Image 1 (cartoon, rainbow, N blue to C red):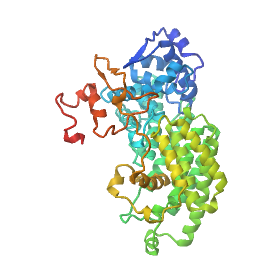
Image 2: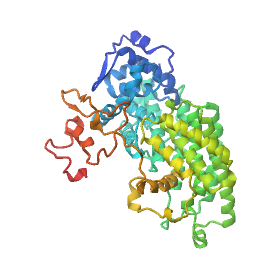
Image 3: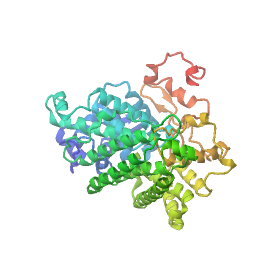
Image 4: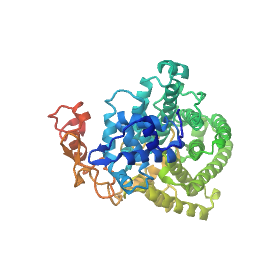
Length: 522
């Protein structure tokens, strides 16, 4: 069975054919029976793998999971989203921090394809988190990319065949993994407004594609175009005024229209959302208030003409509104539990775009339709929320807050201290209108209007977790299991206490190090 294999046979049947004995698995105090794990593999390949088919067939995953626990638990924690087994479904939240710690150990493990695959799975279908800065997916994506670069997975297929000692299937698997690294890495770069960690010259959109992975190839082509657009949007000329880039923007818009014709035959909602997100970032660059030249002198210096400026504004606002509303309405009836972070990111950006246009350019908007759309979208995002204060809860709060107030322009809209904003929001790669919206909404919370509940502290778990060496430590938290806050109670104890007994921490810090008083911890 090759890359992208959608084997209809069950994982249990394949394990029997391969004569592989799958043992019970344990991570801390969480155990899963062999039959439940094999069912998770089936669920993963049915509901999740087709969206970005970069894994080998089920047979390879069964064998690789025995040698790579992180891959096994990554499959379990994702498949648990849709598992009909109440026991498996219930452990999803409890696995958040144990799997995070297991992923941290992957930094110290030898480079291997299963480890990279596991990290990519965790990036694509992340576990609960609060603010985006608390989501470790960006770090895991970077680790996966670096391990892939070290293994030379970016090389042409013929070189990979030589590296795999003539094994074509292994070479194709390596190629598919690299393609997934490109897509996941670039989409996370877009999400954070940070330049891609993968050099553009290592992204070849003309890969010879293994059978069944054409969607992956199309995603790489879109990611490469996104890299080009990100580079353009991030340019500065030293005066904080964007250079004259209207011709380039128009040319890129035409190229995106051509890409749409290539993407449509795949009938992939994720590909459609990636393309829509790229379009929105490009179109919104024209009408974002934060980059418009403020004076005639600024316009002259930027090379823009007022008449053409207005024409561009009208055209791109109209295009952005059409793309965003179409993305939202076609997504409202989807099963969000199967969505990747790419799908959710696209959906949220579309919401911010419509919200911005409805506040600044009301002549483009059907107010009643937009209001109903926001209501349904909020209900969908709330269904993703695990606990008050998590990422989806915050997005709903921001949308509800901004939709009830007029556009910026009063005394309450004075800019915040730039140093206070720098660590939370990164606009450098042109992340678009979402940056402006979050920046505006953040002022509310700087004025002591807080979210009603912070994520529970890690040390709140009444059942300590066995670390495998007889020691115990704080577990996930309370009840349904929200994720730990990045700041805990403000002292950092939720972070450093588990580090005292952690293998990775022991290899990095001396045993007698006092974390609370250590200057590097502050």
